[in-house]
Image (cartoon, rainbow, N blue to C red):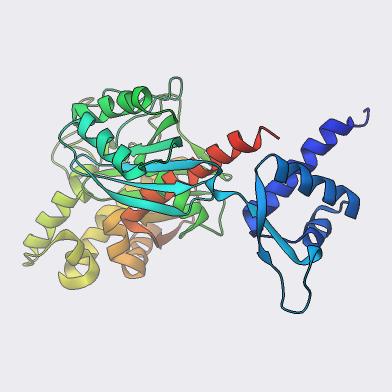
Length: 370
């Protein structure tokens, strides 16, 4: 194999330095030399190139003893690009505008009457900041071929209109992703699945979904439908799901409405979250855990992920107690060893995942100019 050309070698070194600055935070030239293994002159040239390209800047000094050039801390220019992350549910939507490093600059709720109102609110939130990348998380199927939100029964029309309007109104790269997949990204990198490569996230909220991560990679399926566990036929629902509705599927057992009804059967009139947090008593928790174990057993039998994370608002409310009850029931339903964990992010995971995906995509694009 022929050696890399000087320009290729420089590009490789620049990308390495930018990745280190992204992962480690601000670094001195000496620290960059140690971490990259490059010579001092090569690091000096690298710092000059990235500074002239507007990608890094001096953000401070290291240590109180040593001053001068060797103590300068270099960091990525956070204001080089601005991003937006959206969490769009069937009944509400929220957004956060960040810099290139993912630091939040503005956040708020978006109106859900029409797509036009939602986009106008996002533009007000961004203000004078031109958005480089927008990532929108929404329920429903996202086509792997086109990247578009498919026409799924039960979703408001403005969900699909919003994606198209964002593309036409904003000077940004716009990407839509299934909300549960984004939540799994956040749990994998910031939450309950930080130490494992394979897991399935069961999203437990108003709706029910799943996200599949195997060998460190998010798996979407041939049509984008991997994880539509709400449609899973299970015993105890009194019916079967259909292509246009999941009322007879797993959703009918563990969706928020079903959980609320189960709590009322146990004499508790509060919210589903309060019930799952323990207020509805031991009997309710055991019954709910039994329902969850049915779906988790199907996941374990087909995918053998090794770990199931109970996510969403209900997963967060149940915490380790609910996870332990589900694990106990699951152990009796399948021979496949499966750890069960409670979410550490809950409903906030969707927006957190959208921020991570937007940051990664924008940095890849911006750093590609080097």
